Image (cartoon, rainbow, N blue to C red):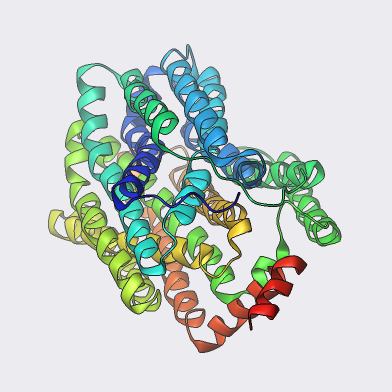
Length: 484
């Protein structure tokens, strides 16, 4: 039942629109929240690490559960898991709007994330199984990437308007109508599909992933504030969990993380690029929001307007990137993305672009171009060439890489900023304290450029073909040999 029934062109576009609605509320939630951080800081008396946790509690749980959600959807039905995700995410959003203090807000953000983990990878798997023609699928993924641009464009403006007129709690209300509409449309128009062979659960692997991501993030965020005696044990636990995953997963017939995926250079490259690009995004939004509101003294709406050039370029470049991937492959979009993100980072790290209006806008435009071009080639490379029966798991690994990157970006950049600011005020020391963070973001751009160039050539494609052949089930391989 892996292959969906053949749908008309109009029905396929409707399925794409429904899946994009889920991405919109998940992506919008993060961009809106970034603009609201200073208001939440004042209202909830939150520290810098507390602000980091409001973002990372969500992305951390999301990253930890995405692969479980992808494999579960392949096993019990993608439509069923997708609808469950919409229900949980919407309920979590309502709870966030009612949170009495920071601790409850962080807890309710984790509830949101449980629902969110069932949305993006499952939606991408539905798209992959709906659009079977490679070029048509690349264009659909380009539209999918454009939705991220829409959320970046709408997020700061919508968030700024809501925060200034109603208050930060209202940013969670917008998920309610979109979530309910997506749920009703999914029930009516999205066909059910699942993998032909059910994958067994892997509770040990899932536990190790949660321990790895959680302990690593805690160690990074708390490093500037806690003693080495508190931080180092969490680092040791993260290392032990990583070694446990590398030792345990290859022994399982049906692992949570099939490490054979990483024998494909394009797939491994897409994973590294996703972590780097989304770490840059998380750090970029975190630094920009705090600078514009706490240093320049802008309100949430004014800060959103300043970030609009970045959002608009992401929105404009994402569909162009999808078309380029469909016609020429992922190499050119990745090179453009890496160059633009690197130059943007250098502007801030070397020339203090944030201190002058013109260079600030140029830095935002360049980052928007880079991020707009990077999303479609990541997604397309991650799922293309993989057996369709494992498309949910492959898409979940790509989505996990994105969320892990954003989690690490906020954790690392926030820790660097906290260490640089120390006991000084933001206004006095922010620019100098943020400079190491901008250098880290420059390194992320260089990683996108270098890995993109390395993993999109002929050699890389041959490794992908060999990996796909090894991943095929024995029955499917026999069928393929007979046809030859």
